Image (cartoon, rainbow, N blue to C red; front, side, top):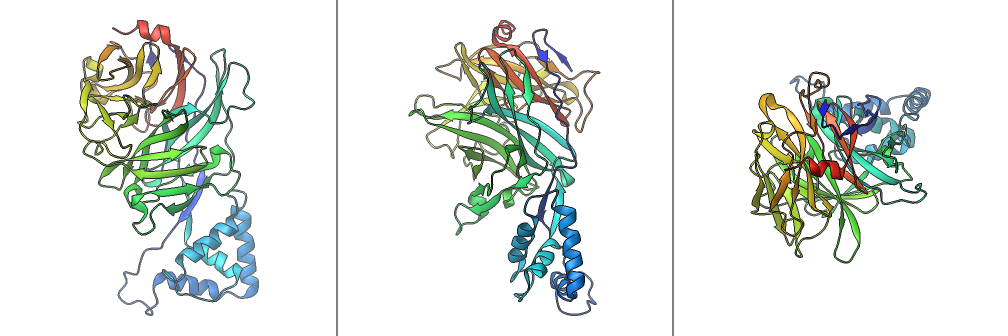
Length: 433
């Protein structure tokens, strides 16, 4: 990966780990053999086999089950019991069972999913809401990453870390046992696709939390979360994140909302500007309206404004491809960053052989539709030394963070793993024209 002379590469590598697993619902395939032994469905036959076990066999199977999975997951007994109640009366008939039988039946309708077995990439970064105990001159951050596992399904995972006054960055170790969140519909009468609330049911470390697809619109992935710490006109702050929901055929933009990174709401965005990828909110309102960058034509960066954070229409083209490394398309690499000179936007450009490079531009602070300056050469470009991966020739980010006058930029290589660079703002601005 070649970089501009003023870019400092950090010795941090965040690689996918197949041992990071969550327990997810599983349903065996339905009967297809026309000469089935009886009229009871396959799911009921599985439950019947568990119910037919004698007490000793049941106890031995429960002991083995909990021994195998308790060290890998929190509260597996409660998880399997909850899964039993999800299928009881729907996939299997209501039945009188012991707790042990219910746990074992529930376990047969679960599976482990390695959510980052294939890739860990497209990071985004924001200041952590808890800055207590931070050394002088340092800042604690939250890093989101896109994990890809079996079936190319994407989910969101988190890490925390610290940026220090000397420019170094440290990422905290991960907890050993990931955990998915409890899900409830925001509007039970409408269904999950109208929005969901995700709840952390214990004192989990943030690195344990996995946001896995839960709604029909997300069933094939939650992709490229772009986090931003949004400050309202009254001074209160909320963390938002725009992302792409994919159902296997159609994409749509959705919004994550959280105050504490322990409780989340996921809601759809609507309007004619939300049918493409890459939307990213500004960190405050502009002239009393929410503002967003988007790529609604899949080629240029557009500026959108709205009175409603969930409704986005129209917009004006703000940045179009200019240099060969962005001739195919240009897009944002996360939310704009407000500096004294204007709005700093980290961009990605796609050029020949679908090579993704990272650049930057500066927009007018009062009128972000006005482009003031941009980098003529990439800040980061895939080259012969570092280009291979799940998708070769890609350098990509979903968001950067300021630490004083220093830019902290996490980015992904080859859609496979993630790392960091830093640079001084003054050096970056001098590279623009």
